[in-house]
Length: 74
Image 1 (cartoon, one colour):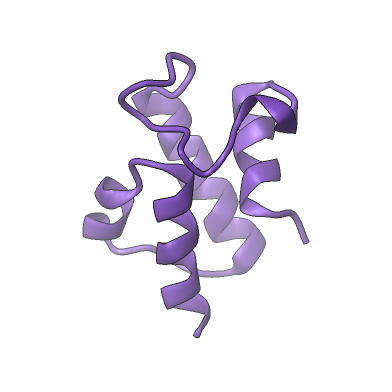
Image 2 (tube, rainbow, N blue to C red; image 1 turned 30 degrees about the vertical axis):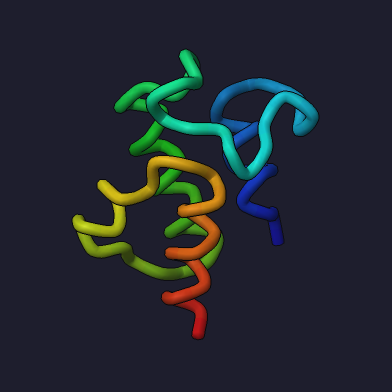
């Protein structure tokens, strides 16, 4: 199963070394609204979950995405 970092890197088309927990929607130019929804769709597909809209909006960093995913997997 892919990690969150691998999913983000795949969608952004970058190496894992270019992103980290602090990578942010606000500061990272490749992270736009279309890619955000692609990330959401991939995570939901891979982990067989469906996020609430509030959680989709709250995923502003990779670290926050991990925290939210953990909530759904517990």
